[in-house]
Length: 138
Image (cartoon, rainbow, N blue to C red; front, side, top):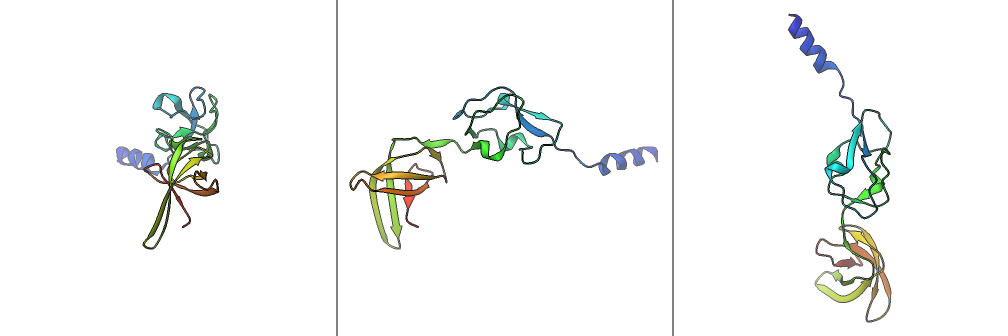
């Protein structure tokens, strides 16, 4: 009977989540590894709580040791760098226009980036696709 009460008491206690912090200083644009993060037992509103949310992501800003990691501090790894030549794709129904452009920013899959069309020197904005191309004009 005592064992049953003890087990029920353990199950009834709410699980406390910790806060994900940087274990050491992580430079901007570095990929976060398990060695770069730690979990503290304090709760910081707006900070990440699970290591799986950060591992494999890229640091968008410098992460200082002991400070909480927030969702805006990390993001998907960049596949397009600034000044990289990318393929611009515009598609509307069966019409598809493909041109080369120069990326004016850096970003990962799903990020919004500005690109200069190399033929017309016009600047357009679009979303980075998984293959590194930029889709413009939805």
